[in-house]
Length: 362
Image (cartoon, rainbow, N blue to C red; front, side, top):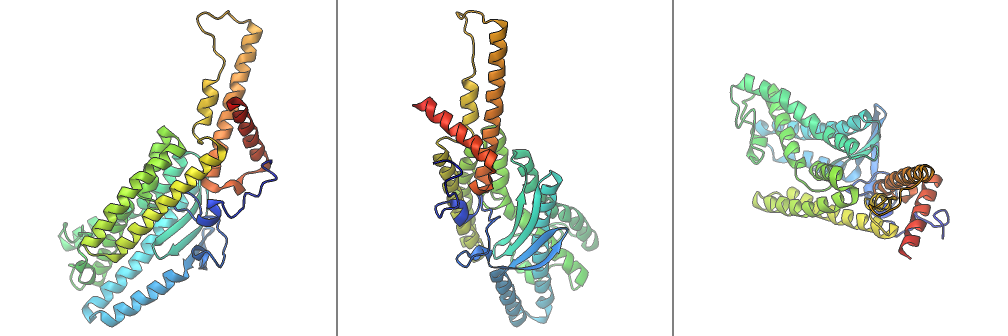
């Protein structure tokens, strides 16, 4: 059965059910049986559509009502500022991913705000450098805000630790910020607290958080895509366990929920990478090595080839290298975007590579 004849949008395609490796749900169309697609568009900014998941809107409404009912006059404003700062900074964090992706020549057209934060749907080129820049773009926004707000708050309050640099584990400081009754100082404190928590939170090496992606992309530069994903997934399991323990100790059911979701995402990501390798019959990082190791060579006891034969061998080696690079690119595209993303030409390239691999093994 050829690549053109096979239905790659079948129900056993992990990308159709779960999105792309690492917790990326880009490309999933709105369907009744997929809650990830139940979202409302609220606007379009710089060509980027922002959608709010209906559960996210419901949780924000519950949070606002709970805050109004339970807060005292002294804590109402700080709590409302915290909610506003959290929504704003998570959204700007995702815009940071989009801007960084476009800066390296990729596409970024959509952001989803959902119960566990935000998801920027980005399509950088299939290189570790482009993906790394795209990932760093999000936390960089929070770091820039901290670089501006922390000195400002320190200057106006005269206190650094505990005020300009609050403890992320001091939950009581949310409702009673140690900055007095100044609305401006309370707003600065809320922005500082939220950005600090977002930076530390996303530093956890676990999918779908930025820390897990950054780890995978750094490993990708040395180990290739498939191996780097497998290692990052294993590290992600430990990250999920550590976050879950911290959530139980604080206690914070939100952290426990995120840890559980992160562990599930790591497991799904592992199954996606395994599915790709099993379907192709070899890892996306191994094929190029197979061709390179198969290049013609001449041992010490071999007869010296003629100039014509040598040029022919060199042309063949260059062709094999070009084919290996193209196959590697196509396999990485499948791992990131699914089989449906391949063009007819790319499917033919992969078919030829698969046929050649089977002939070598037979």
